[in-house]
Image (tube, rainbow, N blue to C red; front, side):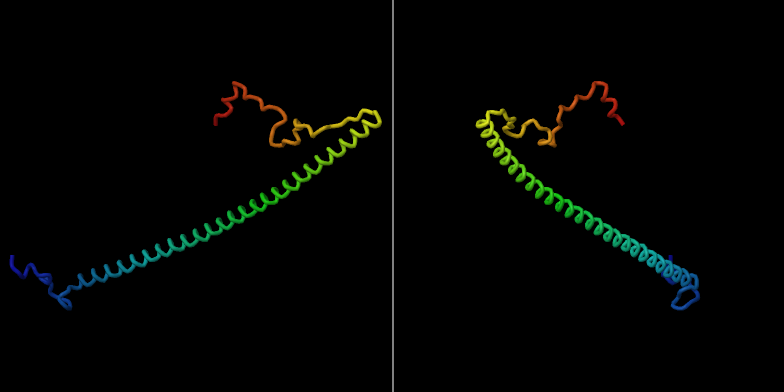
Amino acid sequence: MSSSSLSPTAGRTSGSDGDSAADTHRREKRRLSNRESARRSRLRKQQHLDELVQEVARLQADNARVAARARDIASQYTRVEQENTVLRARAAELGDRLRSVNEVLRLVEEFSGVAMDIQEEMPADDPLLRPWQLPYPAAAMPMGAPHMLHY
């Protein structure tokens, strides 16, 4: 092989700087194709960025809703705790009043001789005093019931 056949400009006969019209056309097409590909890539990146910005906004809104709900629940908890404190104080006050009334009834019973129905304390088995407990034991599940739990 001769050195002229290995040179990059070998076989080119026309065009400026030794380029043929076909080579120039191919380079121009490739340049335009690359430019269009870069434009599409920028558009995809911009769309992805827009989606991420929307997701950030949605997540921030969700976080704000969750935080507001947590504040509401904390506020309700505080309110219920305050109500419970008031109710406990009221129950203690009523217990004291019951003891005082019982003492008066004992005195009346002692001096009058008439039997009085004196309730010493609030009954310990009163289900209204234990609302978190059932007034009756929970029934055991019948043996045939496990099939009811299958989905």
